[in-house]
Length: 389
Ligand SMILES: Cc1ncc(COP(=O)(O)O)c(C=O)c1O
Image (cartoon, rainbow, N blue to C red; front, side, top):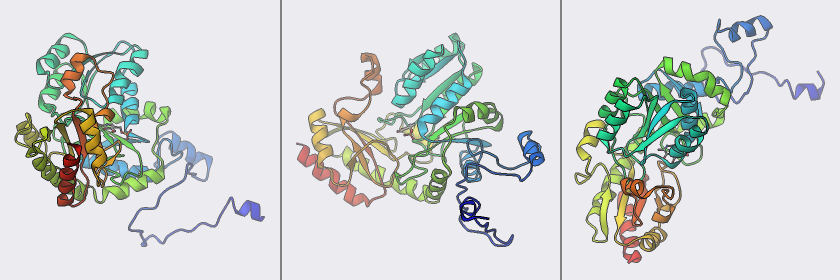
């Protein structure tokens, strides 16, 4: 073997069968070989196990798929390169021309875009309601044949809580599917409800460190089987190295989430008592309008806190600029705290009624609470409020 051949066929190292790494290796390989044509054909016909091409299946991804499906209490999982890819891929795979989708004003902006613009191009109709409009949800599901209902809880940024039992019961009765973007609540919440498909942005709590993007579609086996071919052919696959980093992040998922929730409650209690804060949106506060519903549905209350500042854009920007430990940045769920001042919160595309339902005002500021020391965060919030006025 000449050296230029050798570098393309490097020596193989295999482990003895009784010698295991404690962390699974990253299978950073696009291709897997069976050694002969017969076995390759058997694999492609579904007659044997194995891997062939990483766009469709990869062992590093499979470990993460199994873990996330188990945590969410469902059979199977598909991984994508970002959270929004789960929305686009699952909705495109499940809908066809002439279908109708029920979606919500309070949903993540790109999810509304996918429903209102992307799917509309292919003849999929939709109705947009407020997540609090329970009679409207009943009416639409009774009167309009509907393929699926896509929703979130808690919502972004003002942490409204969807009534999941109401949603799933009426959706099931209508013969439609529920798709719950469960990113904010986490894998450990909502699994007991009759939700058909869970979506997660793994960019947030799963990775946890703000250094990798990913998404997961989690559902019972039959639904994943229905979507698998379409999703893998659209090609939004997660890279094995990203899957490895997310798998590593998952080791501390519960520790981080628990600490972030405790910090979020401490910060929201402080903010509630501050004279310049008109309102605090955090489901863990007994003053939150859906606190009891949140208590019933979730084992904790999430890590996002929003507040209504006395004033508007100017005070919001001054407050955000003065914070020392909260970076002005998009996203939520990482170890570090973040702030979004009112002028950076989405919603420019809302009609007047939709904006009113969204509860986003010129004084709304979103905080994503990290794992720092709670007393430091509270002190920082206090000094920034002083500076803002
Ligand atoms: C609820 C929710 N779903 C989906 C996404 C999209 O995730 P990604 O940024 O990984 O595409 C986000 C991102 O902010 C989100 O907040």
